[in-house]
Length: 344
Image (cartoon, rainbow, N blue to C red; front, side, top):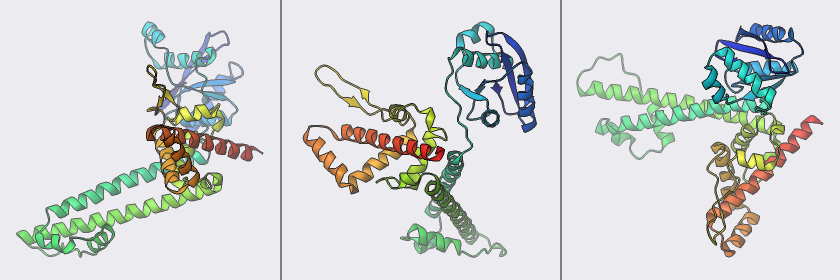
């Protein structure tokens, strides 16, 4: 299927690769039902190649999986074939089907219907709220820079919490008509009050989302919270990286590569060593980084390992790289254990 915002184009191929039919369906619940019903007129539908299973094709993928169809994520089109035959939605749909039939596309689509998808939604909400709150705080402080000296002196030296409380209590004197410098002062006080209220509302939203995320982790992945250095936020980040389908990761090495902590050779001459991996999911990499540095502060076992490696001549970068790889291995097996426990 070639997926778009408003409509999806589907193509049915035989086992020999012959195009049996091509049709377009609306991207609605009724359209999904009609698409599958139409496809089954040509025979049994065992597998489906869907473009954009994480965006426009997400809802279609969930529907097909619920109907017992094995969905394969098709990321890359055959560029040589596109140059020869051109590009159109029916051709893209046919190429997606051929990619599955030939085995070129093998990545199973994420189900997107479990606790990880819930966490992903909450994480998105929190990230946007944090960004907006930071912007509002910066705007409030920028207003203070150009404010009346008397107002600046009144608010000077206050911490963020006290500053926001005082600004939020500024009275709205907009009913009084004043001119000159005093009207600018009045507008400044109103602006500070509105920004303070906005920051307070965003802070409340962030606290609410953090509570929901913590409750989600405690319910679905409590074993992660028992690990030294892993809190709710770090656990959520790693769970999102793994996804609702941990079986898609064949080994701990695959998870390490996904997190960007797999070793990369950088040897030359007589010097043999590996460097940090700059690829992979950078959010997951940052989460593992936080785990390692938390353990370096509070975990005696990690501290002993660090001191022993330093005496062996290892650099701090090399030790951190190894510790992040160890943390990735531990998280991978914990997630697999949770998955097997859920199935049993």
